[in-house]
Image (cartoon, rainbow, N blue to C red; front, side):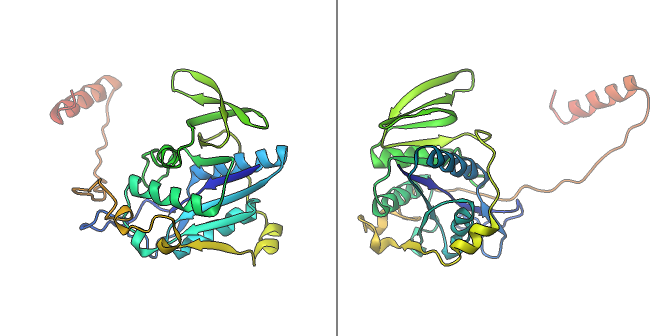
Amino acid sequence: MEILVCIKQVPGTSKVKVDEKTGVLKRDGVASKINPYDLYALETALRIKAKVGGRVTVISMGPPQAELIIKEAYMMGADEGVLISDRRFAGADVLATSYTISQGIKKAGNFDLILCGKQTTDGDTAQVGPEVAEYLKVPHVANVKNIIDIKESSIILEADLTNVLEKLEIKYPCLLTIEKDIFEPRLPSYKKKLETKDREIRTYCLDDLEDKDEKMYGLSGSPTQVERIFPPEVNLAKEIWQGTSEDICDKLFEKLKDMRYV
């Protein structure tokens, strides 16, 4: 089975500056890591490979430094890595990002199963996975909570619909977005780090993709325009109250009333 996992490099801290003109995060010089939700997708892929055989490829869209998370995926057991990187991809919203990733997947090969994390910690939209599936014209299921059975031409799973678990069977090729805690992600292996230190990472730029129209990518291909984005203000003000529980409750009620919360 050919399995593809979409992974993303996200800031390793919440203290990230924002470009006030474009609304884009300033990622240069900021410590980064694999998006935590993508680790569950990668672990799912590796377990499916262990059960039925095949290959696991990871793909990421980002600057050249995103090679670091592909190398980390190698240390966890991924067989191959693809990086989609071009300055012309910068500033993409979810639609342009999804289109770019779908073009990268088409270039990378044919896959039976595409897995994505539920969402990213720097965007939290949970839209990219399903949109990639729409561009690829393959069926998809979001919020997959459990893999029940893996068949030759289909996969049986459970999807979390908040109030109910839905059992589904979906044929390949398909795309799934994986919920957290489906499996415990493994740690990178030092042994695999040594084994894969010289493993190639395929890199594609815009000129390598099937659709080379720059208007489909980056800020030009993003219909969503950020009106204003800013970091939250840090408020360290505090009050310490003493007295009986009744007195403190009365003070709290009056405080909330003054703040117009009640």
